[in-house]
Image 1 (cartoon, helix red, strand yellow):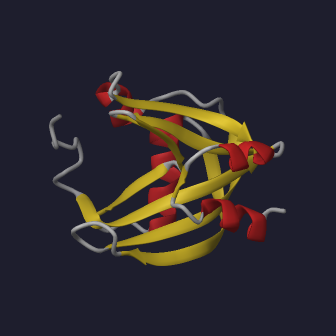
Image 2: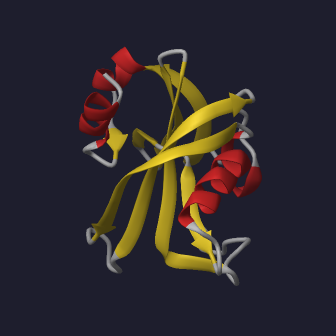
Length: 146
């Protein structure tokens, strides 16, 4: 698989912003199949040069899922040291504005059987059934939503 990213000349590889979007007791997630592993992640991605974390979160959710959101508040700001290079991650509680989850953006062009993306709503109750990254996502939802 190629490591080329369409925005590689403007992206900040050490910073990401993701959104927790709840609508009608459902959470917006990106279902992923990467090789043989299946899991869910929050929509979002890398900041661009001179872009705020809030703006990156709104942009990335729109690009990946076609869902429009607005930021309510920041929930978490963490350093992820699990990869080879540390990465700062911002997690925002977002308000759903409009749209239906539809794969879009770079993910739609990179989507294959072994590197699969599918945005979708899942019920809050089904959080207990799947594998979610970050691993503490379930706890965050319980703390901030329930």
